[in-house]
Length: 357
Image (tube, rainbow, N blue to C red; front, side, top):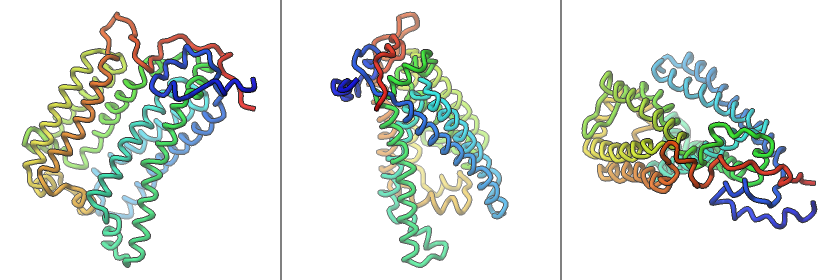
């Protein structure tokens, strides 16, 4: 219908996507866009899978690379490949769970990517140039390599997740998925804010597979545990993260309280440990390969107070986010609540969407 889109203002729905479900305004069909972004996600998954044989070949050609370093990387690549391929297929099929999970993953990817880029640029602005010089490149070539690496990281950490967020948060995309998929699934029934939080917990649990590469080093209120003791602490942390993800998706209040307590304890423990421990002692406990040390050492803050500020900022940010979503955690049997982004409202009428001409 000509002009039907003119009455639609996407800005009204940016803070409350649940309004889409009860809106009588028309939305543009975004089926083609869902296919395009779905294929892009599948390609990202294929790229992650391709890193597996490349890593194996690299390890075979470099005898100095230890198996303990390679295996965690392979597991992370395999997990990334599976997640992106599944999300891509779901997006192509316009599944509501795929839209919700893609948006949550995109937000987490974008925020952590921007933070990573900022930390690298502030802590070690010449890191890539110095690494290039370390392997024998002349100054001019090292600068070109550094610029190229920064551009690639900008695409991977900012532009890709930014595009995913902009697309999947669109009210038109959400409405298209709701029209074509009547079943919200567990992801569609969870408020978007809590789904993103659950994704954070799940990714934290997944990242624990990398700790064997660092000799299971675990900061514990001023102590640096490693080996068997660190492995036990990380195993308990894994269980805790998975429990938080499960409880958050269920909107159980205990998950909120447990997360708040976890943030406070983690901030105190990390700040107390890294703020008073000599970096050389931490590196020694990690039992790092020289190549790993070459990358990590320039990024490690030199001043103890920097660690305190950094860890309080990280855990404090998560705690602040938890405070903003407190009302979305509801006791069992009390209903779904009225939090924005809830997937429990009625499905909109198909007449609410029209196809672009």
